[in-house]
Image (cartoon, rainbow, N blue to C red; front, side):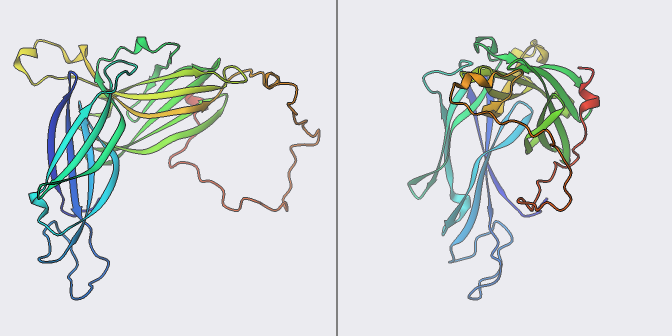
Length: 316
């Protein structure tokens, strides 16, 4: 990781009964080479009488977990960045499911009496003990196996039994990289990887809520919404709440979603109608051809540390 200096502004607020912290971070962008006798910038200190470029990013801490949100932005400043201030706020839309978990985030930079909006997110899902039972038709995956660096959840999507495999990889002390794969019928695929999380607990404390919601499709049962939430115990810093066990309450935050998870068992493709033209497999295929020209010259690389999950999921 880079040792470059950075400056962090911290803002506290509550999303319902879930305490949150937002961190606005900026770091000066070093110039690739000196121009017009301007020295290379290697710290947060501004160069006098010269505009400087800064990269701004934002992260959110909920429970024991901090993660980046929104994409970084680059700004050119001709003022001392330590004189900046930010307006950081959230507000709920009219409805959400589960209720009370969806927020719109806005971050405005304030300088010399002028406000600039630099971050916006209309899909921030976070809450304390959401009522997931209110999500109609949801099929929830169940934790079946857990090791020091991996969790396996078993679920059903379109009558297909599917394993969701979550892997932890340590990057440095307190910083982890998270990935998610699925496997069904001996076939697997990476859904996401390199989701960086800063933890103030051991990874074994973190669990997940994974569920699918069927979407109207032809053939029936072929399309689903997939939602992945991260869960950590809630610990109140208030003495009045000290009698409540941390195991009785949790902070949830949604870290990934897909509205086009395509999977099913025994799908009836004939339901697509009379105009469907189905291919017929050549009786001589598959066959080996060593000199067949490749139309795709660069083959995709498997994820780092990819392994065969068949042995892990066979007992699920």
